[in-house]
Length: 435
Ligand code: PMP
Image (cartoon, rainbow, N blue to C red; front, side, top):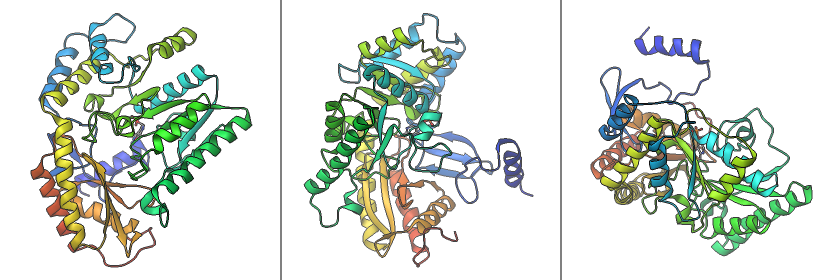
């Protein structure tokens, strides 16, 4: 038995047989730096997938900030602490004026759960609207709202799932305006039905970039239109920025800026501490303070001094290294290269996304091909490039690297993909695949 097989067997025994793992044959990573990770055999992989090490694996500035604060003071969050106040001021300064207050947590799930509690409290309404292919976290409430993979909880009677416009798959024969009308009609129907049920509309919870939905180029005006309908019914807009936030899209710091709507509550997570578990809800002071006066909310670890130091160091690096602009530039270069590959390789379909969050549909005769997508993800790993897949049809290659990804890294990815596509099995699949 190899060392990897032995570790795998121990993992199954102690972490559960079905604890998720990427790849048919897992990668055992032991260290990372910038956009590179290395496995236990000393093999290097280009990381084109991980958004948690947002400013690069083990960025020295973040590592030093964490180490310095860990060597100075770390404790729970009910003492007066300047590090967290400094950080929260710097963070909220990056939002519209109405979003001036932060409550820090340890995960995207905790943030979304708290935002739901705040929205329900502020509106006095229970009803929720989510997209019909979404994930916002692993608490009991959020698991029940999950629509993009199996969960054991029932979808709540007080929620409605609406379809996000996907012009590429749903738009045949329809103009953008017709598509928009059709999907905003679904939101209007959800609002009507929640009002009729007596629950009313407390909030719409969506990722304005629709990452887990597979990055459909949601028709312009959809988010703004949906939020308008919800607000007219007295509900709030909770914008999940766990995936789109902190400059990943290249064109804006936050996904909701691209949609042209200021949320009532924003939830943050993954990239915020470059791997350190810091997350949060950003909202208006009145809303947050009213909730705090009615409900005691404290989070033992959320916003502890070490987490706050990690968050502040991420903001430093984003600014000093101009990483949002880098995401814009390198993302454009990558999409251009992918378009060139698509001209030569039949399986490459629609190429979409913004900045360094890129999706590429894999198809067979224009039909989504999940099996070939899975094959390509494994083939890219064999060629030393880590990426993954997403979407309703599980056929969108998901490219979402640390933001220090440079054009030379994009070129390397493109060369590996070109080579992998030369060997992709040439047959239609039923989506289950033998691979
Ligand atoms: N929101 C979105 C959009 C996510 O993709 C995720 C996790 N992938 C979460 C929330 C939950 O974040 P966490 O795993 O930190 O709880």
